[in-house]
Amino acid sequence: MSTDIMRTEPTRAATMRAVIMHAPGDVRVDDIPTPTIVEPTDAIIRVTAACICGSDLWPYRGIEPVNGPTAMGHEYIGVVEEIGDEVRDISVGDFVVGSFVASDNTCEICRAGFQSRCIHQVMMGGVGTQSDYARIPLADGTLVKVEGDPTPAQTRSLLAASDVLGTGWFAAVAAEAGPGKTVAVVGDGAVGLLAILAAKQLGAERIIAMSRHADRQALATTFGATDIVEERGDAGVAKIKELTGGYGAHSTVEAVGTQESMMQAIHATRPGGHVGYVGVSHGVELDGLDLFFSTVSLLGGPAPVRRFLPELIDLIMSDRIDPGIVFDLTLPIEEAADGYRAMDERRATKVLLTTEL
Image (cartoon, rainbow, N blue to C red; front, side, top):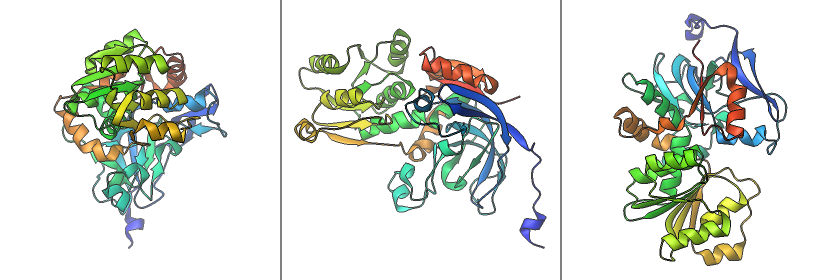
């Protein structure tokens, strides 16, 4: 008798709760079909917590199109409920963290450390993880098992590792933050704040946070910022130059994605320096001659979170970092619309959505 016939399917309800964006500003929690295994490399996880990303605000604000009802979310932690026949490294019952991009973790691009651009990549934003269950494609290459029993604080931090921590970490690495370096961070959202944490862990000597919000300035200082700059644009660049003896930062993180933030990052960086850009670009255009004479290196894009997950999980589970404090509002999934409004109105930096009944 074939394995497929013998297989016992787990018992799950036919429908589940999921956050659906119907139009800009219109977020609802709907009942949709519970996912099932589609490919033999898939896993189904019971999502124990998800969160709202700053990038979710682009369609919420109408800056990106919403083409009909769209399942939201790409950050997640949870327990494996079912695996496909070709999944070997992940088992039912494992508590896992996954990247916001599914990857095989074996192709040449993945092996070079850029799993977010895997030739078989699946963007989890197209799958949706602000829900009770989620189908994770390429499970062996995407999910990382967490050993031990995480505390509540560690659990929050593990959720941050799924995107914002991994993205902030990549930004700091791309900017070549390290010992003896001055790092400037443009953007005080969750990614920018966790890029500060990353720069600190990587040994940066000085970290300049560009922020105008007192609560975020306080969190930036907690994560390791040594200086706060409230000015923006040309004035912000001038302040960075003033703080660095006219040179500019060695390493700059761009974590917003606008024309102003990108130019501020490039111009605040000294010649020979590096810019790590991870803000999802909207309307950003670079003048070739300006870039030519800036003499800086640019590296960025979707963060290869999977590259860093094992290290980040170890740092979290050994209590050496506590990125979970970036979540300043926790809501049940049924109140997701309130979470979107809170982030849109800057009443919250990062919203955690609980899915446990």
